[in-house]
Length: 340
Image 1: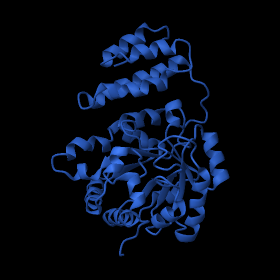
Image 2: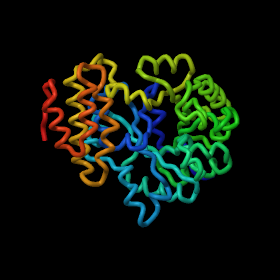
Image 3: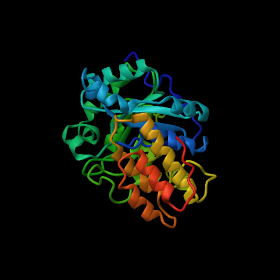
Image 4: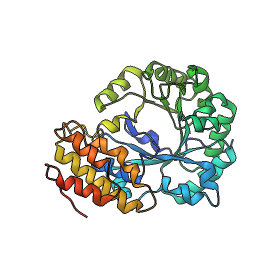
């Protein structure tokens, strides 16, 4: 092949270990990414990912505008990305190599993202039934075709996020197959598709991937994902399992300040002030383009582990628009800075 799969590879320039925030549906939009950036230490957060975006939808003449919001980066986020020297990666999924090629051209022409990640790990059953994401583990030749097509269309580095199997663990065969395409990074969630989020992630399988990497594609970085709930725990995983980086998923739901090693316990006022900033930015950014109810999945992040949190959370779950959130916060016993 006449292209270089490692071209413009920012990943190799990042100081190890690398910490990244996982791509999550209806979670890691431009608004939440900005909120995380606002409270993170630049030394602890290195890469952010978009929500995962359908290549079919992105390339469709009618459907394209409907999914483009998943790849939106508002100006205030761009400023913070630059200030904190944090990279931003678009994650895409699908089943057709030609659509990956076309979608990659579209993303690269926009010039907003530093990299593209291919989703070969999402375990959601309706996606798997379509043959996408983790279903590709059962289609190794197609998976390679997809990576090659994406690499060929791209002028930014291509990475892959995946799992260790579908029903059974097949780390050695599957990761060996991916490594033949020499992706910049493979992020491995230490569970099978069948496990979804159940049970413990098997980091021994992630370590196995680092050994295979050394034999097949030494320049490919291996990142681990699964059951990491603090920076300290992430550093322990790096030391114990030899990975180059750690991706954080559900850990961010326990602590929005996850990527700030100087932060200890936050006061109720700090938590609720951040909740307000999130709700305000969400409304200003999306207006009527996104359902306000999406915000409710975030309320628990901010309303926990302090006196009266359950009552405030219950009231917030009854809200339907920003002014309702404002009323709840103004009535609570904590002093919240409400600005417009």
